[in-house]
Image 1 (cartoon, each protein chain N blue to C red):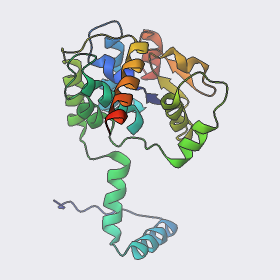
Image 2 (cartoon, chains in turn orange, cyan; image 1 turned 30 degrees about the vertical axis):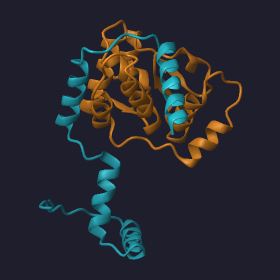
Image 3 (cartoon, rainbow over the protein chains, first blue to last red; image 1 turned 90 degrees about the horizontal axis):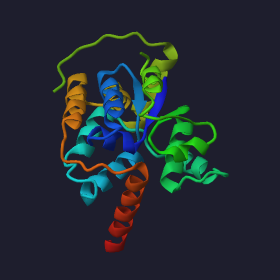
Image 4 (cartoon, rainbow over the protein chains, first blue to last red; image 1 turned 135 degrees about the vertical axis):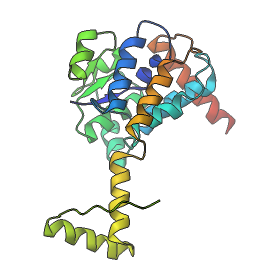
Amino acid sequence: MRFFVDANVVVYSAMQGPYQQGCVDVLLAVADGVAEGYTSTAALEEVWHLELSGKAGSLTGLTRRAHAIFSPLLPVTDEALQIALAMRNTSVGANDRLHAATCAANGIATICTADTGFDGVSGLSRVDPLDHAAVLKLLGR
Amino acid sequence: MITERVQILLTPAQRRRLEDEARRQARSVASLVREAIDARFGTVSRQERIAAAKAIAAMSGGRYLTPEEINRAVEEEREAFFADH
């Protein structure tokens, strides 16, 4: 199953806390090639902003390592922007709309994210990294 | 360094598309195939990807934020960046 990996999954993989184990499982499965997880330049831009800000502690090297795992990244294309601009009845912000639109442009119907805002996005089902059974299913185990 | 020789079979249509594109870009068919492989699969080996994932899991300097706090921190950082530029 192809799925999109949101920025917070990358961030939580590097942070001790309730989300870490599920997020690390996702990253390792993608890195190993046993799960079809993708992310985009826009998602890694968010990780980079957080890394450079220092607001979540020291995350030096996180974006570079995440890029190694997910390269080549999904591009945010003209088509994705058009889809994002056309999205109605959603409470998610501009960047999250771009993520949802990037999924739509690439035929991806599942997003792995801790952000419950994606629950209301039409055409996209969310897998929460805290939901162990759902993560295992996502990773084909 | 280019050292590996691979022989593959293509459909006539695929060959035509490759040769047309090579002519249009004034490049060799081989360079187009190499570029397509890198674009589709990236240039990072499986071992390097796994090492990167393990290195992320071993990072210990992060401070836990809720998903909402992460979104807010990213927005604030973005605003600060554009305010400075």
